[in-house]
Length: 286
DNA sequence: CGACTCTCCTGGGTGC
DNA sequence: TGCACCCAGGAGAGTC
Image: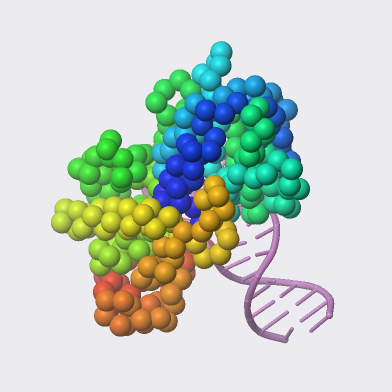
């Protein structure tokens, strides 16, 4: 699933393969892909046709590509669970899950938005501020220079919820999803249901170091892939999956102590942790 | 406003 | 073999 490292790998690929190119045609192949573009698929395509991608930016799991021209607009994208932005040969037939395609005036490789589970989306938004208005509520991510660790620690301890739920809240800290939340908590030796208001400063500090570490290492590895669900713009998979300590490793040994990894039901999904390194707190909250 | 649940979607896996 | 189910999960809408 694309989280911060995977989205950043895609962003870097877009800088290389899309920025500087002029869109000749935008085709929406599945209306759901542009459901957040309220004016509809035709308007979406019209707003991009003939315009040039001038940059590729990211905040958390959101990507946007400003387009040059009369209006200051940007193509905003979220990959959801299974979304990919990949380059392709315009002469080759499109696979079944291509939801949108952009062809370029230079007749070079096209850009395809592929999304099997259709949780991802694209829209064209006005670029007024530093960050597009629809994602103004998304907090900086832990690798951004504008990320304020002290403000994060204070906000975290004002919350009354479980630490994992807080890590997944993109308005508190962005870029972290189910995989890296579990991995960061394991590194920091914190249980996922630990109440945020009981966290000590030193524990928040440990958690931030853990989160930054796991995100940075995954980024270097090109992201996490379990299958072809996540790929870079060239269709290649990352290899961080082999470095995961607990995520998806039910009953396998904890790399630190050897205890068997447990899987708990959490918010209609899963939380993976080590029963020894991450003991359940007295007053669990989730 | 904060905390929390529900909903959207597809295809691979599983149990009967 | 077929079919009903379950599961993966990001984030916004909705509820209390």
